[in-house]
Amino acid sequence: MTTYSEYLGKIFPGVKVQKISLNAGFSCPNRDGSKGSGGCIYCRNDSFSPSYCMERRPLRQQIEDGKAFFQRKYPKMKFLAYFQSYTNTYSSSPALLRSLYKEALDVEDVVGLVIGTRPDTLPDHILDVMEEFNARVPVFLEIGAETSSDATLSLINRNHTWEDVCSSVERASARGLRCGMHLIAGLPGENDDEVIRNVVNACRLPIDTLKLHQLQILRDTPLHSLWKEGKIDVKPYSLEAYLDLCARIADIVPENIVIERFLAQAPPDMVVAPKWGLKNYQFMNLLDGIIRKKQR
Image 1 (cartoon, rainbow, N blue to C red):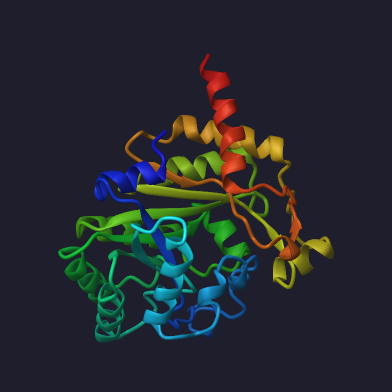
Image 2 (image 1 turned 45 degrees about the horizontal axis):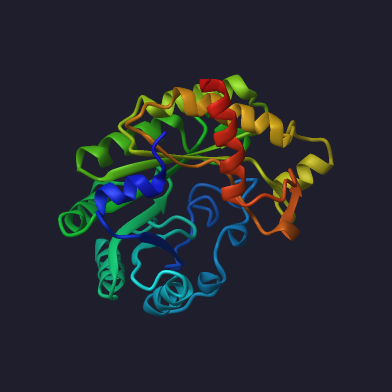
């Protein structure tokens, strides 16, 4: 299994590269009424956004703050401007996107762009902009799919379809963009076999990377309320069960697709379940042990 750092090492030889998460001020069609309201039932954006991009500050300042944070440990590090918060292609203005990407790349030591978005906000005129910048620096597109089941997508209030996912990945890949997909394990009503099916369906598409993490029930989300009231079928994973599932997934993902991560780590005070108290490296050490044991 190729690690994400090894993957980046092939694209940026001899250089340590780190993402800097950014809040570019976008909204989401699932929040502002365009497609829906209230967002996905599990979503709490502040659970995964670093403190330096929590407030809407100038993009350059966010990047410089992120650089200062990481360069204390690695002074010669280079950076990817990671447009992470909300839906970062939710704009009808190619000029706005060009301006944001240029602003990010004008900062010293920024060597690429990572764009996090939904599959239903990637019309051709937006892909045109990404293709332009991909001719200058590597552009990575992270598409939130979460599941390949339209029934589950409806249940969790995603307001897009699996066909939207397939179309966006195929069109973006045809432009030469590096495509990543995001999936969640343990969504309402989905068991291990269905998670495996989601992974298999994702790997049939021209993706380069895969992000998977366990569903976390977070305070102050619709999912938390529905779960407490017994109105939705969610069974949080035990650590052992999730490790076993991840070992199965690592075994079936083709070698040409890099698994970027297996673990979500929201701030502990936000997490209702599952509460494992593990850092990513600790989880990966446990998973590596299971995988090595299976290979003996």
